[in-house]
Structure formats: C-alpha cells, structure tokens
Length: 472
Ligand SMILES: Cc1cc2nc3c(=O)[nH]c(=O)nc-3n(C[C@H](O)[C@H](O)[C@H](O)COP(=O)(O)OP(=O)(O)OC[C@H]3O[C@@H](n4cnc5c(N)ncnc54)[C@H](O)[C@@H]3O)c2cc1C
Image (cartoon, rainbow, N blue to C red; front, side, top):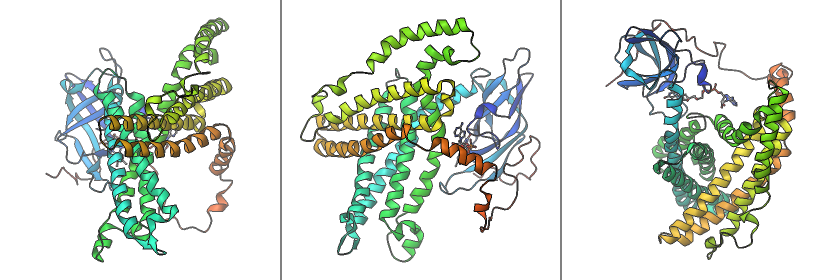
C-alpha cells in the first residue's frame, strides 16, 4: 500500500506521484517511501495524482500496479528500531504504464478509498496491542513471583505491584475496546470511524506504557536482549524487543497526533455545521444572522441535555451492581461525557475559528473520550463474562481496577484542559526555532552528520542499479 513519499507523510493530500492519462493507460512517475512488503509483493496499490484534463476529473487516485512492470525499482531496504522482520523499501516509478482497468474506483477517490480501508484495518493494530498486553502480563506474573529482592518476590514490593495491576487492568480494558469495536464493525450498519480511531489511539499508547513497565519490572534483564540472556543461560525474554516493536504503532496508520485531530474534528463537526458560519470571517452579516438563528434553535435543544442525565440518578445502571459494584463507574462515565461536551462547547465559544489550532486542548478532549470509552467497554465486557459464566467475578474486579485507575487519569486530564503550559510552550518553541537557546546544545557530539534531511524524490530513472529486486 504505497501512499507515503519522502516529502509527504501525515498530510497525504499533497502527494506528488503522478499518473498521467495516455490512451487506455496511465503513466506513473514518483517515489514512494517505507513500502511495507513492497520488496516482495507481486501487486502494489499505489496512490498517485491524476492531473485534471479533458475527460479526466483528476485528483488522487488508487491503482493496482504489478511490481514486475517496466520502470518499477526497489531502491533501498529500510531498517528500523523494531519490526526487524519487516520487508520494507523505497519504491521508484519511472514511466510505468498502468492500464486504466487497474484503477480502483473513480479518479479523485483514492484518499477516500485509502481512509475507508484504514477504518477496519485500524482494528488489527489494537488487536496486536491486546496480544502485547497479554504477553507483558504473563512475563510480569512469572518473573515478579520468581525474582526475590530484599527477602520477598519483587511483585510484593508496592512500587512493582502497582505496575502489574496496571498491566492486568489495562489489558482487560483494551481487549474490551477491541471486542466492542470489532463487533460494531461486523454489524456493518455501524459507522465505526470514531471507535476504530479511538481503539488505535488508545491501544498503541497503552501497549507502549505496558511494555515500558514490563522492562522496568524486569530490571536490567528488561534492557538485555533475548539472545544475550539465552547466551548466559537464562530464559530469552525479549522485553526490549517488545518495546521497540510497539513504538511504531504510535506513528503509523495515523500517528497519535493525527488521530487526536481526526477524532476531535468528528467531535466538533456537529457544532461547525450549525455554527460554522458564525465564526467564519468570510461570511456576510446576513449569513451570520441566519446562522445565529439556526444555532439558537440547535443549542436550545442540545445544551439542556448536558445539564442532567442518568449519571446523577442514584442507583442508575443498577444491573452492574454485583459483589463488586461497577454501576458507580458507569454513572461517572455518563456524567463525564456530558462534562466533556460542555468543555468542548466552552472551548469552541472561547476560541471560535482558532479552535483547530488548540491541539493541546483537543488532544486532552480526545484522551478523555478514549478513557471513557474504555471504561464503558470494560464494564460491559465484565457483565457479559458474568452472564456467560466465564470468570465473571474476576472480570468485575479487573474492570473495577481499570475504572479506578482510568478515573484518576480522566480527572487529571479535565484539570489540564484549563491549567496547562500550552501558551508558555508556544513561546518556548518560538525561542527554540529562532535559536534563542542554541547555547544549551553546546558540549555534545552529533553523529548524524550534515546530509539533507529529506532525500531527493525527483521522479526519473533509478539512480542506483536495481540493487534489491524482489527475492523469492
Ligand atoms: C515501519 C514503517 C512502515 C510503514 N509502512 C507504510 C506503508 O506500507 N505504506 C505507506 O504508505 N506508508 C508506510 N509508512 C509510513 C507511515 O504511515 C508514516 O510514517 C506516517 O504516516 C507518518 O508520516 P511521517 O513519518 O512522514 O511523519 P510526518 O507527517 O512528517 O510527522 C512528523 C511528526 O509531526 C506530527 N504531525 C504531522 N502533522 C501534524 C499536524 N497537523 N498536527 C500535529 N502533529 C502533526 C506527526 O504526528 C509526527 O509526530 C510506514 C512507516 C514505517 C516507519
């Protein structure tokens, strides 16, 4: 799946690879970076820009390209911090002829197709994160029971124990999130854009934290490679590899920062569609007056819903009150969801058109939403497991532990919506970029040299001999 280019990452709308119509074919030119499996694949899905011309709507378009086509070269095999088994390369297209029949969908629909594919694809990544959490739990359990320091297993030292509890509770909740989102995807009728994005965001961030805690629990052995451990006669536990392998999940398939923006946009979309004209400086006074009237009607109905709800009704969600009581957590979720909507609305009124630049605020809004979603999913899963007779009691305990841990994070995030260093940070960044603090960098040796930051991606014949043709 070839979308990324040396100069185009999170913002694919600017991509430079071209597909110029020529008779019944298109002719592709461009360079694609970090093509996973591109080194071994027979078929590539390539995103390229079709120029607008007579009979051609143009725009970013998806093509199936046979990797054996004339003009396709794999120029480099990329190597990474983790995922060292990945086949990944730079793929160059030089006057590659692709029949029009190989176009997927219409011209201009490429990004839409790519994003739709990403929706369900996004669920496989958090599913892997669940697997990572389960493995971290197993190793943490076995190791921390066996390893003794200061006369007792390290698990029984509170500082280590809290990490184990975090891994167990978070793995339970993460599995609940992935199960719920996957069920919704299977039901087809649901638009799972937000759930899939939340699962990806939350899964990648939490799995990273869990693996980091595992490395800490393992002490020096957490930092040692499995090979080295084995070579000196110990069990080859690849904790450091887990950490390295998980790191990329926060970057690819939509980085955490981009997921924050994507989910936040969905959250404020309803407001923009009713009140967008009000804050748009291009709109005339009469447009604004009309928008004001529409917004008045919308908010007259919407705002009262945010004042009261089930979360304030004592005993609500009573079906979740068992030996362990989860009903209070669900009431908290309901109250917090309304508080979140009020906070978002307040942010919109305060910053209006500048809201989209308030990434710190928006990121926290989304992180609160992710925690609330995970809490609700964890409670529902615990109740489901109780009903089906599988570990219901223990599931309730884990859901309770997760919700209590999550509530502390949510309360802190709510505080940080309004008490933070965002404005100050912006000033510091300005200082950093203008060189004000360059003196602080003195005394280091920078081994990265002074080559270009981004490789030249000018289309043309491969500058290298085709050094890495696919290996079968
Ligand atoms: C191992 C690996 C495999 C990959 N496989 C594929 C593949 O098969 N096909 C493919 O097409 N691509 C692939 N990619 C590319 C991957 O999808 C990109 O790395 C990812 O989209 C991010 O783009 P970028 O690295 O250019 O970062 P950039 O877009 O340059 O971003 C740099 C930083 O800025 C942040 N940022 C960017 N824009 C904003 C914004 N508007 N607001 C806030 N923060 C922002 C990012 O989150 C990031 O932290 C792969 C990458 C790797 C490392």
